[in-house]
Length: 216
Ligand code: AP5
Ligand code: MG
Image (tube, rainbow, N blue to C red; front, side):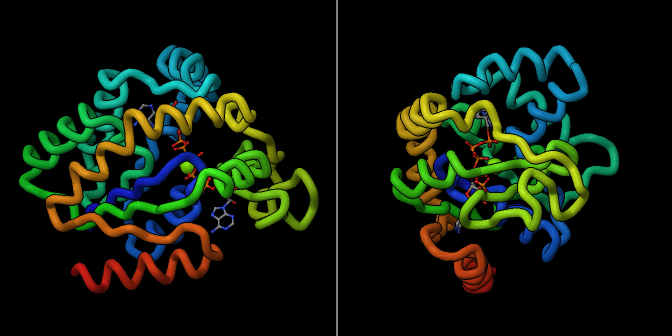
């Protein structure tokens, strides 16, 4: 299975991806996580990427395509994967097509999580992420048992710098301009499923599972 999870910032891509990769044994390929991890390791690539990310801008297509290709073609790579937050431009969608062609494969489904702008803003400002394991919480919708502490590993919870209101607004603007056009790109191929993301975590997941059953 090869899945792509799309949607505006804060739609719940990462939250749903975590369950899907566990249930279907998929490799989770989140370009956002890859950039943040690279920066944590003190690498030049990650540090450069964070200059764009913190203000809510996109990292260049060239760099992004390169890290995805490296991951997909590395030795021992899982041939079943879930792409989260990639592709984000039409140029990246073309590059992904080339990679899939090289593998002699295609996408099983493109899951597009649909959420209104007001809900997105509410979700972003309340998001907290574990510094150690990356698990995601929300101050209101999914609070940890103890404030500021990860339930899973005891790590410190922090607010992503790009979750500041100004960065979020910029990310939404860029999403409309650069990423939304990809929806049409996949629509014609019969693999796109729109999922109502403005429901509970469980209801969104149930709808994704149902759509996958209908498709496969
Ligand atoms: P990335 O990390 O991918 O960020 P994003 O796309 O903006 O999406 P988020 O991770 O912010 O949100 P999400 O949809 O995963 O939602 P989540 O599950 O966390 O990318 C970051 C940056 O990296 C980009 O801005 C760009 O600069 C760069 N980048 C990445 N990929 C790139 C690419 N391909 N090309 C160029 N640049 C790239 O949920 C959000 C919150 O809502 C959480 O608190 C969660 O608990 C809560 N929540 C989720 N679902 C529900 C629900 N159903 N009900 C109530 N609360 C919910
Ligand atoms: Mg995410």
